[in-house]
View (cartoon, rainbow, N blue to C red):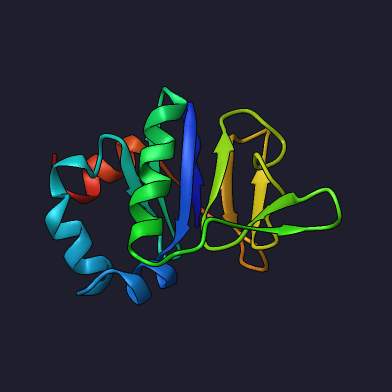
Length: 134
């Protein structure tokens, strides 16, 4: 499965949420159920939090960082950054904002999916609304 992109997107592997959020992804969904089908959606592997403004994305990054996830690592002599436990992808861009080893971007279909997994069906706002009966 794949996640449809819209505006700015913070993508977090669900396995990372299960490790850092007490109660895992299921409890996270319960706590934030009103946002699923709006600015939150997911497939079996990836969770997406979306925003129009970069300060909202920074807030999402900070939220997960406070839970223990590491947003990025620095490499090279110039202090280049590479996404680690999450990544940010802008809609209709060919690459995440920093390099990311675990995600594939399909610019033509405007979606992302977990590397080494089939893209399959694309999940977005409408699919989430149907899934959650909204």
